[in-house]
Length: 329
Image (tube, rainbow, N blue to C red; front, top):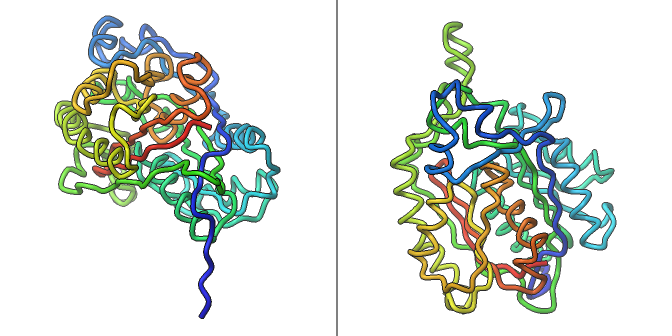
């Protein structure tokens, strides 16, 4: 038996994003949840969230982001040989969205979905890095895409007002130098009910009185878990890359809540010079899309540049998490 070996290193070659077409300010959503703009800003930092039009699908958002990422990587779509789509809002149990996306792009690549919620993008990066370095793939398209507005109850005070619609995509390929550090990931399924769908599809099938399932979270418990349990994971990812917090130039956490982000910066011990992604203020929480969106915003605003070392960490429903240090493309 012969074993194929790939390049020693991989890196992100190109980045692309697609935000929902409409910016929805706090004023537009406060009545159903009996709240205020002041309360939402204080508790989450969110001023607006981006949401897609009713006729825009998760695949539409994914395609826009993917085409931009491929173009920015300087390759053609037919050079992509693996497509990984992370989403919890593709509305079909089967077939998955990844082969549909691949077909949209005009390619017949290996294609599969992953369901790791807000950690899904970092899960995808970890898998893409391994596939490239194993020689199983040359160029991997990783997409995190969500249309969260399809699965919210506008009157729900636990999570609905946080959520937005978007897609972020990157191409991961071979590199002569390290571009993606070791992925540190895991889960704590004992907390799986902290962020959940309100009913299973079987319950809906068997009981016509069960409302359409939407998303729900137990906010205080999620806040505590994310703020304090994720900092050791982030520090472990830095150490696994052979670095210290002083080596990090950019911090790109999942855009869950500005208070969580601020607490993580403090708990990880990141120095003052580190640029911190806070795209949540304008885009809301877009789950699997949030880290690439925050990356794009940092680059666009001049707070991050190609070659910078960035720590990224995703965490969410499951409870699942993943972190790695990457080089900004």
